[in-house]
Length: 179
Ligand code: SF4
Ligand code: SF4
Image 1 (spheres, rainbow, N blue to C red):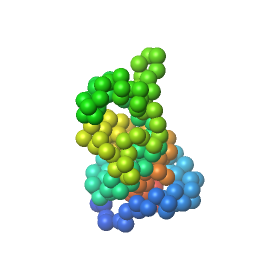
Image 2 (image 1 turned 120 degrees about the horizontal axis):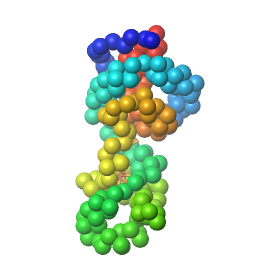
Image 3 (image 1 turned 90 degrees about the horizontal axis):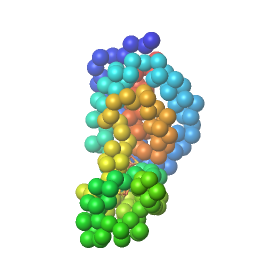
Image 4 (image 1 turned 90 degrees about the vertical axis):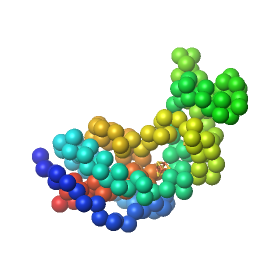
């Protein structure tokens, strides 16, 4: 077991936000990230959560999602009935019209957006930002607990989300993975 520091200092590292560069670095670091996932699995999950929350709180405000929008081009968004009703009101549509235009609904009533990229992405910006869905607000989920239980999903987006990329790189330093 590696003991992690009880506090961290996040230095002003350069934040990489160029998606092409991030994709190339992700391909280069595939093995390193596999090793990092195994390393994190051996750590105290509460301490890792503490580090991830601190790093995320520092890095997320420095990255402008409106200049990226990459998750809106790749995520499959689940929608609740309350969200569909709120959006229908916002768009001045009926719920049935909203569903037929934008939503795929299963026989069990489970709803997902019917296109990827999302209908509501305009360039790199969300055109319904105030009404966006809980899944959009929560991504990339780095403010949540139990980070080490979600490593597979998080690292899957390492090559696509600049926030995840930079938080993971900072976490490698803060957790002393590179020592
Ligand atoms: S609703 Fe907005 S934030 Fe959510 S996926 Fe669509 S464009 Fe992105
Ligand atoms: S959450 Fe990540 S992928 Fe989505 S817009 Fe922000 S930086 Fe880009």
